[in-house]
Length: 70
Image (cartoon, rainbow, N blue to C red; front, side):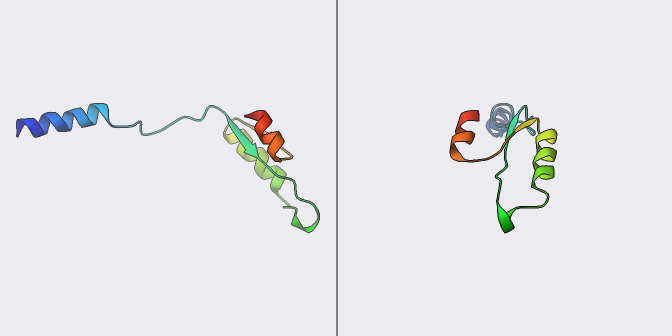
């Protein structure tokens, strides 16, 4: 029994990950669509996510622009 208790204590002390992770910065990938494919609230949504998670908006969100901010 003592061996099991020691093992359980070790697992709790060593293998338990943190219960929460903080977000210090982010990248909001916000593509721009043209014509009938555009989303009415896309700018407002990108701004809200950027404000909530300390992010920078990448727009237009093509491959080169995303790679440049990484």
